[in-house]
Image (cartoon, rainbow, N blue to C red; front, side):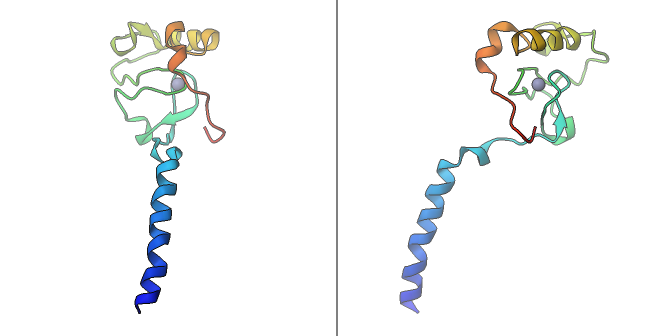
Amino acid sequence: MITDENEFLPEVVYEEIENKDNTESMEIRGDSKCPCCGYLTIPNKGDAIGYICPVCMWEIDLFIENDEEPSDLNHGLSLKEATKNYQKFGAVLQRLKQYCREPKEYE
Ligand SMILES: [Zn+2]
């Protein structure tokens, strides 16, 4: 029936607009703890090399074998140093703090 289709169309348009505004759904939701800040920000079960934690700016480096080994992906910082910096500045490096976001409730 034509009248039913006409009633359906405006609803579809409305949903598209709603999704565009919903930036939350565009973000990658993590399922693993960031080794630096400890929030659940890392996707793909932590197997996400090069992924940068949005909370502390630690870049996932799967090549370091322990938390004292300098990470090439993180300006030569070791995970231990980065964690210390995060506790002090709220980011792996003080100058990166401006790019960090607050952790979400579910993280
Ligand atoms: Zn982090």
